[in-house]
Length: 190
Image (cartoon, rainbow, N blue to C red):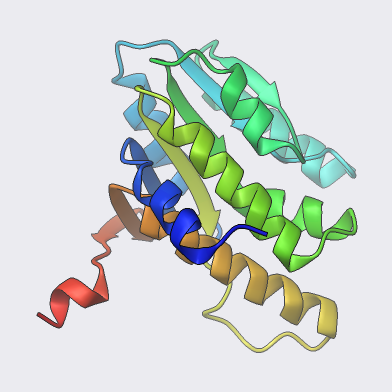
C-alpha cells in the first residue's frame, strides 16, 4: 500500500482534471459532453458501465447517442489502463467513477486495493497533457443504506470522490443542471 505522502503527491499532480459531482440526472454527463464538444482535440470517452440488464443496455445506448462519433473505451475495472490508451493530448471523459467503484467492489476488491487503483488512475491522468473530466455521483446525501454492502459502497465512493476532488484543478457540484464550484476547506479557513 502506498504511503499517504506519495498518494497526495500523485493526486496533486493531476492538474488537467475536472471532477463533476452530483446526484443522478443532475446534468453531469450533459455538461461533460458539452465541454468536450467545444474542444479542438480528439475526444475519448472512457465508459465504466456494464450492460447487465435491459435498463442498463438502454441507458448505455442513450449515452452513446449523445456522443458525436467519439472514440469509446469500455472498461469496467482497469481504469488506469483505459486512461493510458487515450492519446496524451486528447480530451478524455471518464463516465463514471460511481459505476467503476461499484464494479471493482463487487469483483471482490478491498477498500485498500480500490484506493490503490484510484491512485494509479490519477497517476495516469497526471502524465497526460490533455484535459480530463471525471464524473461521479454524490451518494452520501440521502438516507443511510439499510445493509452493510450498501453502507460500505457509500463510504468507499465518498472517500474516492474526496481523493479525486483533491487531485482536481476544478471540482463542480451539479444540481438541476446548475453548477457550484467546490473549494478546498483549508483555503476558506485561512
